[in-house]
Image 1 (cartoon, rainbow, N blue to C red):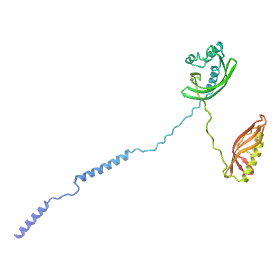
Image 2 (cartoon, rainbow, N blue to C red; image 1 turned 135 degrees about the vertical axis):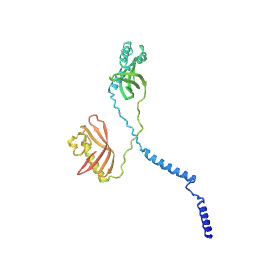
Image 3 (spheres, rainbow, N blue to C red; image 1 turned 60 degrees about the horizontal axis):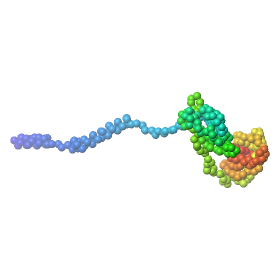
Image 4 (cartoon, rainbow, N blue to C red; image 1 turned 180 degrees about the vertical axis):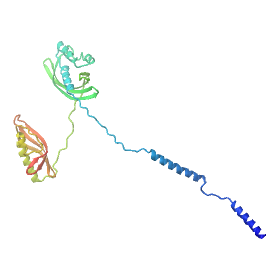
Length: 303
């Protein structure tokens, strides 16, 4: 009987144990679920970016500037003929009428009307053109060109005369057939003046020894003494690579001015001015040279 009671108590304990709640830790928490979602999203996003990524390259842009060659011969000739007729007149009615007729070959109708009274019938002066310089021809736009020129006039009034020089700018149109017409009247302009630029002068740097300097200067004096009348065959003993041309002039060597020598390896660079007397004009002629010399058996001008 006791055994039966014990068995029943044991079964009751086991049943209670089996019905006890089991508490899971970690796997069902909301925070863990959120972390899993973030991890999976990151993985999916990474795979997506890998397949859709765009290769990035450094793009080097290069601007290509095309040089357009303009044949300005026709434009310059047309301008010179116009200038000669525009600035030439005599103080009489017939001359002025001839001038107007000639200008009709160069000017648009509008400009012909604009210039009709610029030289009047009663003008007291006469004008002739003694010199014309074309300073620039530039393309303003398609088929339109600007020309800057200077004109020298001899102005005569009664028995007095004077020379004046002025600069102007005009615009021309050139059609596809090459024909020209002036579309803008001569307008006062300016021409380039002397620049303040001064090139850096070479200086001796002590690289040439006194013996070498003496040899080089003796060689150059011999060469430049006979150079003006030397033939190509004679030059070949002193000059390589056609470094200097034959000139065939009646010059007499006088002296060197400010020779500067610098040595680099086997070569000696010489910068100097050579003074000659021109036997024809009797004036002094000064030529400037930058020469490269090398010595094999003898000194030679190689550049």
